[in-house]
Image (cartoon, rainbow, N blue to C red; front, side, top):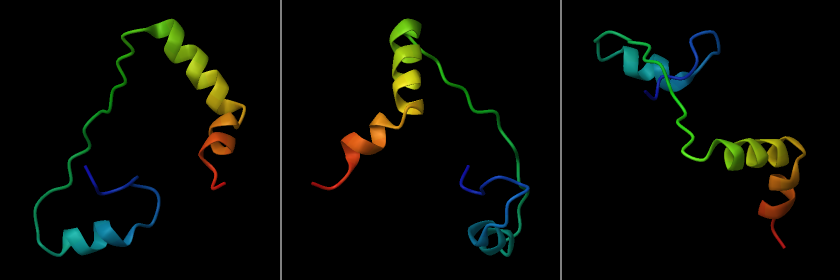
Length: 57
């Protein structure tokens, strides 16, 4: 983790690669314990309500 997406330029990945080692892509999972609530929240965030709620007052 922490190396960014492989097809997007990312300076941190270049810095980390100087120390050797091997980049390993591991899958990332989302486990929703309440799928209905997760779907509603995802829909609300897609409307942009989250940016409205998180803006500076």
